[in-house]
Length: 374
Image (cartoon, rainbow, N blue to C red; front, side, top):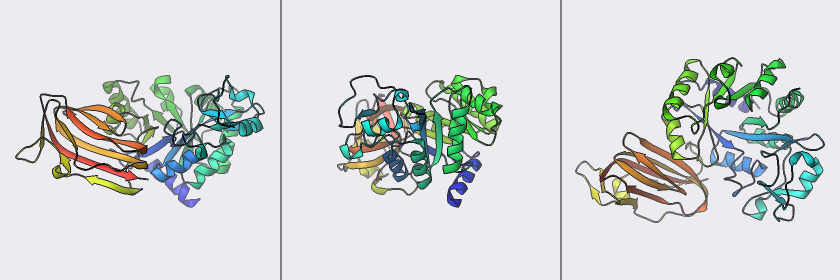
């Protein structure tokens, strides 16, 4: 317990220094869109810990008989199957099923049948978060003007995780209700695009979620700088390079993701570590040791990549020009002025890596590729 509280204390101190000990949040656990594990499942908690995530996000709804259960959508259809593994043929709202029915009649979707588990209660989920030492973001997926259910969630989180070891993140109206109830000793996270900056600032002990997808680059940079100047911790979500690149250019404390791999900090087994020109097949090497590409020429690794059951592929590239990169199962562009940095989770695949010039001439000044099995 002391270790868990100390971890939370360290998080509170991470407010200065670009990329200083940033915290990666496994959004609904590591489930990779319900393939490797069920969304918001207990297995997704274990995978998050194994991959090196320091935090996790989950969602809470009410069963028909008033139990707090972990589920994002208002219906079970996207994330669940019938208990026998068949697809749900009609809409099944969460609030129409008792806890026993939710537990007995449905399982969470995953590719492998052995990873299809039962819907957890919030208590079960939080117990596993504590066991794995994960700082927990809890999002109530219901609007309750009385605040009674918010108080129930907070009381349970206090009991299981302990005060200070979690964040309540929700639509900003829910945050206002929580503060109106006189609850000031719980950290909140406010979502900027849903309200104005001042409302989040005035709630006290509130992380500011700044969307890397909804704000353009200038707006994003301005809001991050403004939040930092007021001493507010910053959070952003990213799955793609275009959004992760915005985050990497700024000082963001918390990075929420479904598909990115967390920063390497000694976790897993290093399978590939390539950072010299001789490690890559490339058309031309300049006298200063850089890779020179004409339009549509490509760079690949000079050896086959291993199959990765569960891991991450990490790339850093510095260049002049414009290139298209294929990394894992993502394709994206990197241009002059970017130190391209991307990192993607891999599940049961031979990871792909390729760099193709889109400019008449592109020059790669630095190239590093790592693959880790978690």
